[in-house]
Image 1 (cartoon, rainbow, N blue to C red):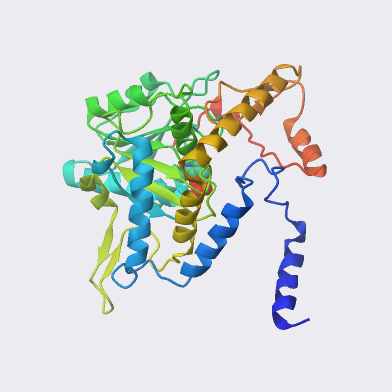
Image 2: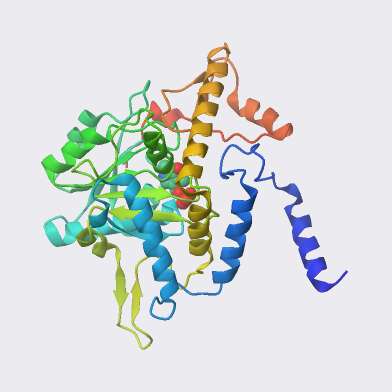
Length: 373
Ligand SMILES: *Cc1c(COP(=O)(O)O)cnc(C)c1O
């Protein structure tokens, strides 16, 4: 065995304990379009750009072109006035969210300088990435309960929680834990009334909902066509089925995006101008994402969305027939949260894992007893 073969063999031995990310048995973390040729094209694209450094677009202008192409294409899905929407390609949902919270914080410090202890209002169902962002950025979180049958945030509760320190409201479309959308149009009205930033977390739901809409399926309003929405995050490494390390953060306009940037000339080295949290970053994920979007294309995504919609209807129908398990709320995208009053769902998940299926378990008690920080 030559060196190459023995290294690759060692890697495949290290992988032995992993569940197979392909094939559809792992119901979290991985998103498989099943299109093997799209995957091969993405791998080649990744290889072509893996040593290009996204730190400096003047040295690698190709990366700027790829990023602009992707952002423009994604903006089209979320605004009737996509030309004025601005955005950035990031490594994932968490990075997109941290950047949006940073932008809202820096926007508030310029426009509302009297706020010294900024707060963001989060439904209990908002992704942990917002708590992480608040922790990193020195911002307080105010947690608002969701309705315990629809699992959507109650906009009246949100309004009651707004204080002179509020800088940002959050809604998910759809949320990760229950797969339902918050009432974004109501949050948009609040954002306008109180002049606060509204971020829509469309990380997992946005791409698919945009394609459901193209198919003429019923979809709630959640994007920049609502006047109060300031920013929206959408992960492409989820339902756009690109390799990992691909998300887009969008802003209503360029003026809002500029608060996301970081610059530093206060050291002895080169002037740092960072659009994202990462500085040196591989061009691989960007090129792989670009290639996947091109390969699957608008028609391909319509077909995938149709297939996912049908599968969701079918799975829902089967769950309705079971006595011990039920679906929580009325999920709008593709995520289903299953509950039981008679079975221990942790044990059920363990049993499924033994037969090669991975489902993610969520404790769920926060819905009834929201923590406050
Ligand atoms: C996945 C997800 C995130 C975080 O994204 P990562 O890509 O895991 O960093 C944020 N919000 C929602 C709704 C998500 O589904």
